[in-house]
Image (cartoon, rainbow, N blue to C red):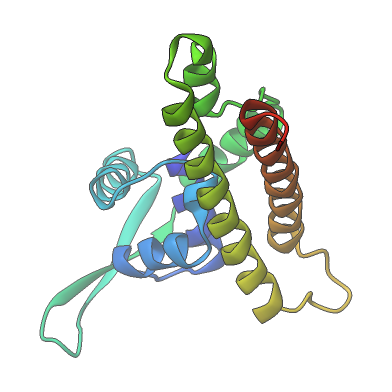
Length: 179
């Protein structure tokens, strides 16, 4: 998935250097799409260059005196981008929260500690919703264009709201009726 993101970003931002692409991935919260680290990003960037799917177009000195490596997508990279779009665009997967794995053994776990785990999920989900709210309030849809990224974030927000409701119901059921 990281190669698709890098190739896609380079089609949108030809001539960008690695740090710019990584910053865009972080700013746009791509971590909700795929887990990546700085190391995995640069590894994939290097692999794309070695495969000839991207190429360096110029080397500039930045204001800090460091040289930057600016990239563009190649013709074979565009073909790979199209293949990856089909590959990932046709996948539909189950929601896979790691929390579900822990929940399988909830009856064998201390009730108070389980409630702490659920509260952790509630807290994390609220943070995700807040980040999505911030992004959505600071961006406007482009007139006459479908803003797929905005729509994706709106959908993600809806999923998080459903999860939040579910976590809160689960917590209430475990706590039992208030006497």
